[in-house]
Length: 627
Ligand code: GLC
Image 1 (cartoon, rainbow, N blue to C red):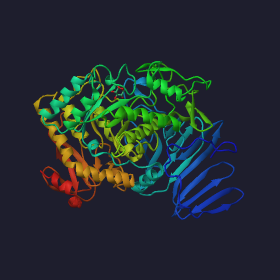
Image 2 (cartoon, protein in one colour):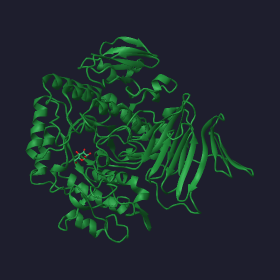
Image 3 (cartoon, helix red, strand yellow):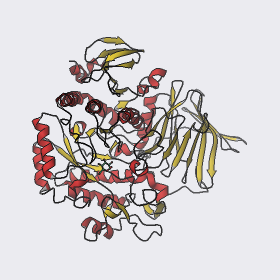
Image 4 (tube, rainbow, N blue to C red):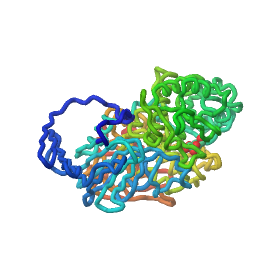
């Protein structure tokens, strides 16, 4: 729905599949209403008020709009919420799995620019995916509003039975999914927005990162220690300290002879991923800046003629207009040149984009982009696409550098469809038990929003974990889709041997468990690639008729067969675990349990309660898990 007679020329950055087979539609027009009918259901809209009702094939109400239209330039919609209806998905979120009663603002932010840390009261995050999966009496439905401007969804907060959605500008480009099965909806949503490509095998291993390893010698020391202590580890990461004065795609003096360093690490079995931030240092001698200017590649200020200049890590910087396909191609070439030194992946950070010195801590809303030929857009209208478009360029660059390998890109910011371009990590968390626990619903909602390849900073980024917290985080991390230990400059060292011999042994076992599970994980990633299903799934994904399973915030399914009940609190020796219907085996004792009830599972520090679903025996990987 658009205001006026014309639709906007802004292409969708979310939708991958543009061509769909035709469907037979019957159109019934009366004086008061329009009704569209297909074999899947019907949509009836009242002419005078814009109110509409979507029904499924059996004429059951799926969504009912109490209001729909424009308030000045702002599209808005109000839906009726029913008793017991829960709301999930919504991309990257803090707080519980069910978002009903809360407000979500889709506006990508660098959380630390706005709050002291991630917390459950936050309305915005680094990634915006305006997609919801609702569950009501065991039946699911989905809604996606493709509009990259700021959107605010009040989901029963101001009024318990009303879900109000509004955007600052743009159109009402709605996709409604009648369900009623959860997997079907995720499958369909990812058919529309694209699926996670198969990652390189090494990317499913353990990753070691830190802000920052400040010299080549330090990276080599960590690598040597990893091997000496017999930790399986596939990747080491370079944060911003590898650069020359924070100039993107460079190595500074403390990283001499990078080719030699990377070749040596490769021989020791490490892949290396380096960070790339969008801000290009405004240094007239800097070759990347010069080439970018020659191409007129940067976002313009409000007048539309001069490049906008703002501050971020390198100091004053210009910002590539990734929405422009020519700029993405250029960036891909720059990145490929850099990667040819021997890098295996790229980590896109600060791509909300985050700025240090503007009032909104991002590009001003009146800056100008060029998303398509002869089409301009204000930054405010396309803000949530910036990180996504950078990640798309990064994937293209990785493919250019290594055309025969599966690319690996990690991103902090994104929009619906980000899974086509990159894995996502949830940004700057803290080393607290609350943030460990919050990792679970955050990753589950991301998974329901199409992002199968995701993880949190293991051990916590800000502050320092206690040995116990670190051990528990490594145990959870080993069962997350993306498994990277990362910490901040002023955190204490967080390599897995830094917490004493007992925790070192526990961490090694946790990592080894992941490697034993890797064939199974690969099956899960194949499912993500082929059907869009999350790797880490809420219980409701397979047990949507079970109200206890649907409300579960602190357990998850890894693929269809493995149930994980991580320990998320200190001082725990056992924990209560809900087993949904069916028969389950405790992976450690091989004891069998009938599901549909809670049990108490032993959870000493060296063990994470893990259950395998009966019937999974065919999976070789699972059988091997038996100890
Ligand atoms: C941002 C990132 C963090 C990184 C740091 C320095 O805070 O979220 O992961 O270590 O910047 O580059």
